[in-house]
Length: 292
Image (cartoon, rainbow, N blue to C red):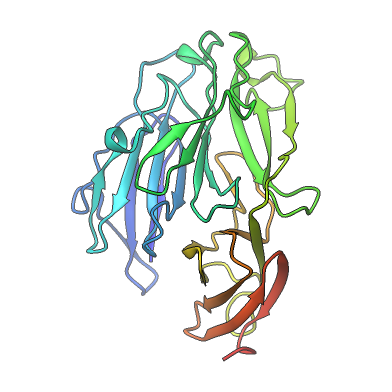
């Protein structure tokens, strides 16, 4: 298991779990290039190879310019910086970053919150990077009405959640970071909820109920395979919310035009559950050890 930590305005650090209650710093050994200041970090398998990749958003109130980083997991314990070739450089000052398949095509997309140059409002268009399925992304924030550029608001925090249970991820964006009663200008701002109007693609949502493992299945690895391909998530408890925000479970998978899929859950205990032929547009609960 690999765990990443970042502190506000500090460079990223990567620690490998030794399995004995201790961790070792492997930041340089795995190919990460730590730079200040980290704000948001987001793990997600954007290229559907079953390996967690890492996106780091960099920002600081009153600072900049900075550049975000997408680290692709090479599968051999190392990472490669693919930010430029993937097209997800972002803006000069970014905060929350979160993965979510908002159009249910089977590939994780990426939302990046932008409070503007120096986090002071001007140039504050958010980024919604649509995954093209070939390792590259296209910014569709304007087309999907999530850019929110007004050159005033400080877009800092966000989370995905299917609040109306229609199978499509909606998003909430928080302007400012902190209580809206705080006096600091960097903390003030609205909460904005955006409903996803959806399309004809299908989904499967997975709840986890651990028995030998922890009750919520934190750390479980879930893979869904269908005619649309394979998608992978590791349950980190965030539910699609990162950096001072909490998303909503269950785990959400888009499966495109597929009408059914196979669901495999690898629990922290080592138990593996497999559910074949799960119907599209289903929300299921997998109880550890009941589908082997």
